[in-house]
Image 1: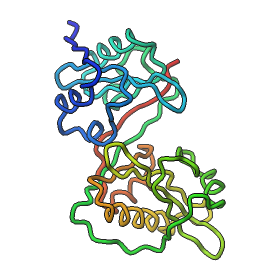
Image 2 (image 1 turned 120 degrees about the vertical axis):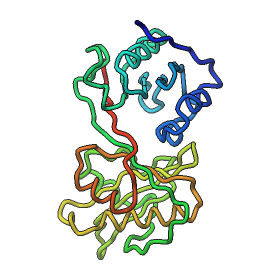
Image 3 (image 1 turned 135 degrees about the horizontal axis):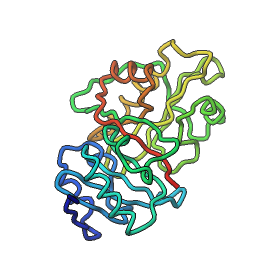
Image 4 (image 1 turned 180 degrees about the vertical axis):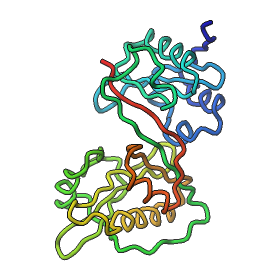
Length: 248
């Protein structure tokens, strides 16, 4: 039996997503209504379509753990516009039809930290200028960095410096939801295991908390065990695990 589906009118899309899944951190902190092309709602299973500004790709995202309902939502979204990429919850990915599976899916997780009541954290990291010429070369060592110097969304860069050498770096970008999004956290391979990424994160967390942001979040590859240990120790909670990838 095909699940019932409701096509959401434009202009109320983000509100209906929030009503369908009021406690979902993905929707609360990562979804804005200004770039949604279409939305499907089936009870507590939802999906939306957006066109990625940087690439022009039509990307469908669904939330819900029942494969048949997720498939119905993706099918409805693809009828509106050909889908080039998908993001779904990890638990349903392997049960999707081949048409909605990526040949090279990325396995990633969402982590959040509530800054309410957080005390300032000591850190060896310092603020860096956005045009610091040492940042981009260091990020070449990362396979997950997706924000680079010059990005207009950047609020600040922080890093650990020894002499004239930048050893570790990270940034905070502006989120339309008001949350602080930590990105591009990277340490030089020769200095990993020394806790430098922790110093960078502590600095970013302290400054974001001082800005009175409502939430701090980040994303990481789900198999990154060193990252998992770090973010857990910093007080972050893993709140969702997903698969994302191009399907065409």
